[in-house]
Image (cartoon, rainbow, N blue to C red; front, side, top):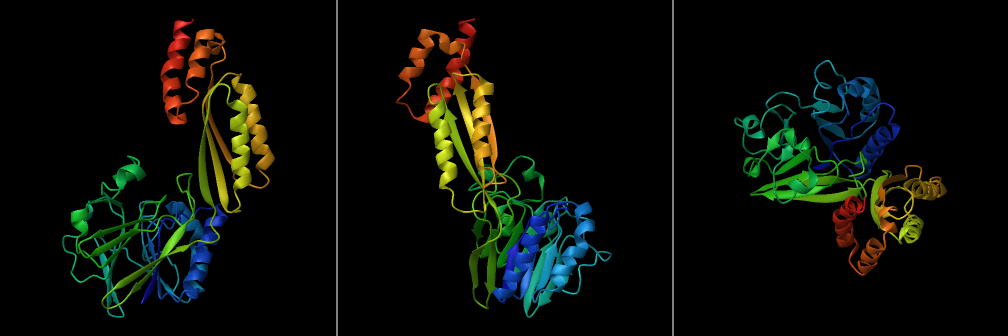
Length: 346
């Protein structure tokens, strides 16, 4: 049996592209011969959006060949229930602490988002589960600290010991930026990442998982969401005497992008010898030159002018002596030294 696994679409009124992505995913599910479409939480960005967009989701789901299995996430915890009609093709797993059903000899269980530890929710969970849907934070030190903010770790904490042999496949939701695959003693755990670029942390092509469950195996395939834009973040370090070359490097970076789905984000950090307003105007001119090609192009400058300090010959000589150093090291040196020079030379 084949399942599509996705999560965190965060459908939102006024963000038509997100609804279009859901439609694309459903058509792709039919093309791939999927029997079921799993949404592991946060289908909607808020419960208000759930109310406003329910009829659109119902229309998309009613037209699909596959059936849908959905659990609520922390953003749309009140968007599901007996009074919420998503059509004949949608199964809502909303009973707490868990909600199980059997489909064609496969045991499927959902743990809807709730303000509790995962370990508390599964105390009475039956054995032999094939697919478990959950929406929360897996505290695995191999990845968590590089991906999550403190706020994100508040939701449904899950520890590796809780996942050992809990099910053959755990379809997770809640991590947006990246696809993450983990394995704990007989349990395959997957975060597919959001199929939509929700913020600038969502770099690279967006994807979903095709899960084929057989008697003795589970086969996974990662598929690209072909119509979804995605962010490409690029940092540039500017320092005195390199202002013009950084502008040209930004131009070259933007010219090199061939994928029309890319939403470039240019971050310019560092220190300049000229006036801040003059350099910001130069950056704005570069952005305007390319915004027709990249409608979602973002420039995030984080620059400081040290023109007064650099008028001092000693400081200019110091800057010149750092010319052969790595840019990151140069940045750290300037962060420490230039403010000190500014105070000393007052």
